[in-house]
Image 1 (spheres, rainbow, N blue to C red):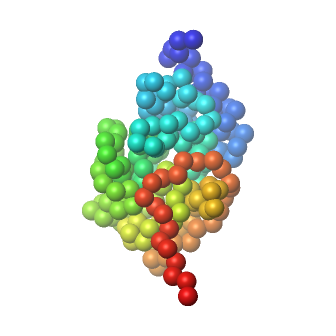
Image 2: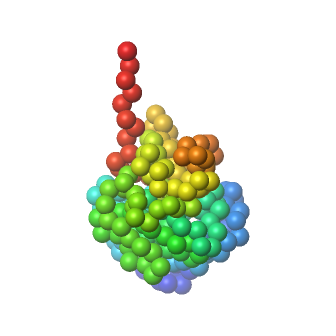
Length: 210
C-alpha cells in the first residue's frame, strides 16, 4: 500500500484516539500538539510506514525513535509552559523538539551528530551527557529516552525548582520518571513501567565496594 498524506492524517488521528487518550496522555495542549505536528516528517523515508505504530522506530547508529505513547507521556509529565527554557537530551530526528516548540518552549536540543533543523530550536552537537552550559539555567530537562543515571553535569545546568522528565533503566526494565531540582539536588519518582529507547553514554558509575 502506498502511504499518502491523507493516510498519515488518518493514522495520526487514530494514534491520538487509540494510543494517547486511552493511556494517561490527558493534557489537552499535548493532545493538540501531537494531533497537529506531522510525525512522518521526522521519520526516515524507508521507515515512514511505521510512523504511527506504537513501537520504537530504528534509526542509524544504533539509535531509535521512541513510540508515540512514550513521547506523549513525557510531555504530559513535563507540564510545559510557554516560554520555558528546555534542555532536550537526545534530539534524534527532531520530533520531540518540534512538539516542545509547538507548546511554546525555547528549546536547546542536544545531539551527538547531525540533529534536526527546526525553526525556534537551537541544536547543539556534542555528547548527550554534557548538555549545553552556555544556555543555562533551564526550567525543564527533557531526556528523550531511558538512562541509568541523570548526570550531575545536567542537573547543574537547571534552575532551582526545575522540572525533569526522563526514562530510567534498572536491571533491563525501563520506567518513566519525573521530578524536580531543589537546592541543586534532583529527586525523581517513578511514574510507570513503559517500553522506551535507551540512550547511549549514560551508564551509571561503578560503585566502590569494600
